[in-house]
Length: 304
Ligand code: ATP
Ligand code: MG
Image 1: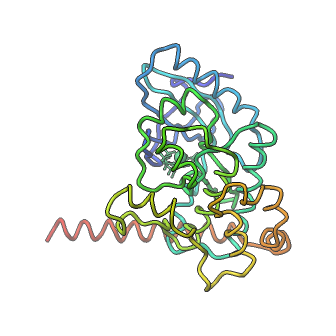
Image 2 (image 1 turned 60 degrees about the vertical axis):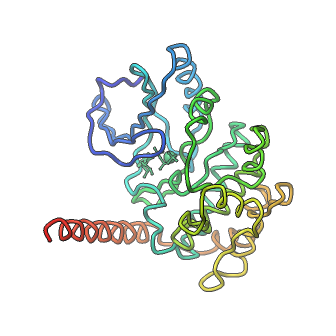
């Protein structure tokens, strides 16, 4: 079936990114809650149609580690994209206190399996691996979203890419600065995976923008500096080695997905029980408490 706007009841906003807004919606014919992403694009109808057609292959991307795709349509110059609603949201908002090793192992295993599925079964390189694109639900499931499936969509968005938190691999930053966009290979995603793991372990992005004079200096640090490492405390040698295998400056030296799946860090993950449901519930609780505290502080500032 094809989804259209008249079937949807709009609910609250789930978040905003560089390119658009994500809202919770109810699909009335099926009574299913979905997440609807709105992307505003100044494109002609032919190009918008091309994007909708390209997104259609997402119907085949059915895997436990990939967010389900329900359909896409456009109205005027906005593309609307409906996907599985993940009721715990993205990991960037759940990681703020740092994610412990056993939970990080579960998340990493899901990410590697998802990325391997995309590459082997769909011939897709993700291109945007980062904590905001790793979604979680209260069942404790971890799934990837926002991978590069539509060439036309990627080209239309590329011009406006001005994020101050770059997960791009050094070779890709270097390539883009030379006007060369062809340096992206699957190992660039492996770098982003390693960086995402560091961020989740610490609870914050490892190249904080406020410590650099400008974006240029920050990107220089990624290209020329030593790669970041997991903290000594709280993480095993296996976990630290796993991340080091991802964050190699030379792309060919990075591990493949098959090697990562066979790594002792993920082997240990398969051997132990992890209470993901409990962790998600606790993380949501802490996220909400923090949000309430911020809200109170803002109200006090307002009233004083
Ligand atoms: P960027 O624009 O750089 O990709 P982003 O990934 O944060 O950043 P969006 O993809 O537009 O931007 O998503 C905005 C927010 O909406 C996310 O950070 C996430 O918290 C939330 N979100 C996205 N998809 C879903 C979903 N399927 N279920 C629940 N929440 C979602
Ligand atoms: Mg996203």
